[in-house]
Length: 99
Image (cartoon, rainbow, N blue to C red; front, side, top):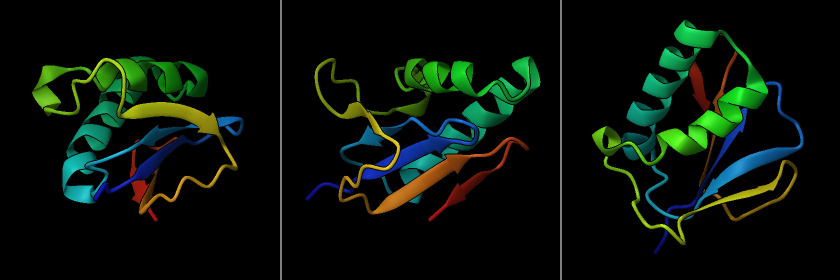
């Protein structure tokens, strides 16, 4: 059974990232917290660039995430319900919240 999750970027209200499996906090938070801090340190909170670079960061080997080239991630409407078990928000201040 998949553990679905969605990732929102504070300041982006038109879309969010859908992750089909391994969306539980112990798998997601190390990646999201590291990414959010490193991005904010390098560029500040630039929500549109952060959204795009989050997708790129999902392929970094150091996080051991899904390496499938055809499945696993999607971009969906911000208000869409995807049956997600968790919703992560990358906040302006560099923190990550989990619902």
